[in-house]
Amino acid sequence: MNLFYTPNIQDQFYQLDEIESKHCIRVLRLKENDIIHLIDGKGNLFKAKIIDAHPKRCSVQCIETQTEFGKLNYHLHIALAPTKNIDRTEWFLEKCTEIGIHEFTPLQSTHSERKVVKHERLFKVITSAVKQSLKAYHPKLNELTSFTDLVSSPFDGEKYIAHCNEGPKTHLKNLYKAQQNALILIGPEGDFSPDEVELAKKHGFQEISLGQSRLRTETAGVVACNIISLENQ
Image (cartoon, rainbow, N blue to C red; front, side, top):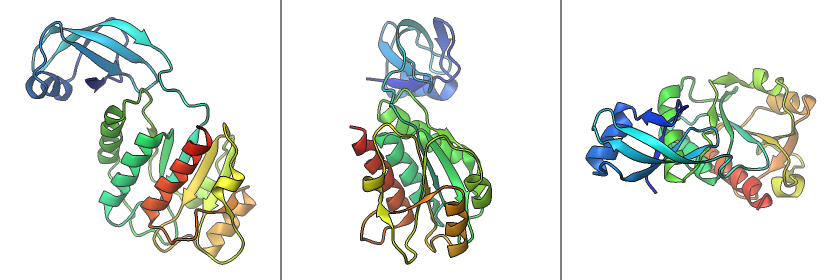
């Protein structure tokens, strides 16, 4: 299936942007009357026919629409402190998109090593993963948000904070129940500070473990995402 991201599609006829047109015509060498598929990132999957195979402004006609394609029956939001090596954060975004997630927030915490992220670059990573994994829903990417602002924001669902500080913690798989919405906080390499953990608990977050191994930040994010996915199989 040749899949293209078309977030602004509204009508039966649509013109791919220059990047998608080039990929369609120059790279894939598709031609008029060939069938492709489009996604709008909102759950719609369109079957379309190429009517003008122009390498800069390829035009298509939608001939079939599937709504709520691949819709999940829960909402997963992971807030993760971006790693110093941004490639590792990009890997996390890619893999979680492939597994299934709805929302990402880059998290600024006390021990964060990275203070700036390029939103556009991370968005492109997610978009690429959406197309590769045949997803009709495009996960939301929020702006870099402070720990205090995030934990004090309302969330309709279960809230968890993963950390390696001393004290009793329950494994995520033993707390989470299928079809529940979940917000999971993943800290930086230096972990969340004790004060941050206490603040999160005051706002209703439950302390969780992701296993006995000490995981890298991006690995912890993927493990958490996969646990939620498996519980909803």
